Amino acid sequence: MTTNTSQNVPTKERRKRHPLVAFGLAALAVGGVGAAITSAAWTDNTLFAAPAAAATFDLQGSLDGKTWTQSGNADAIELTIPTSQLANLLPGQTRTLDLWVRNESSVNAALTSQVAFASNSTFTTKPTVAVSGLVASLTPTGGTGAQDQFQLTVTTPSDWAPVNQGKSGTVVVTISATATS
Image (cartoon, rainbow, N blue to C red; front, side, top):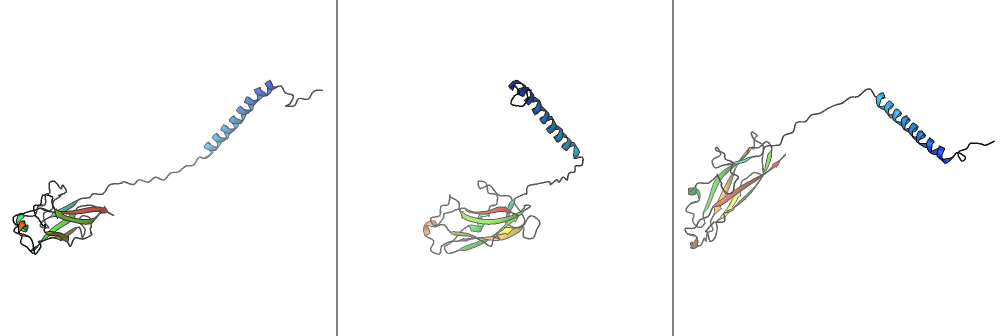
């Protein structure tokens, strides 16, 4: 009597059964996944919408605290102090001018200042120029603290040399602002 064991089964017959077994296992796996997918009948969602918008940012200046101008182009400065304010400077003189800045933004503005003579100055010895009284930050438009009055001071040396007679220069005040929250 001959016993059929896997060792005695010809190789050709084993090859035929192998694809059938693999197909059967794959069919069971797909059927199980399909049953799992259809068994979850309840679903729910929660959705959120959040409109987003960028801040506005605009710094303006004034010579009188009433008329405001956007003067941000160094090649075409719109806020020009009248010539008479710094005309006829003498040795040892100090002149102080009031200027204003306003935050026309929707966010706070941190301020810094720089003041210097333009490169076309003909003074042999330039007067000292300084900004004082400028606040460190301004609140947004409409709030208390949205504008500030500060001073530009020009001082000539007490021993200002006679070679400076008839010379001139343009003082440029730059107030820079950085948006902050």
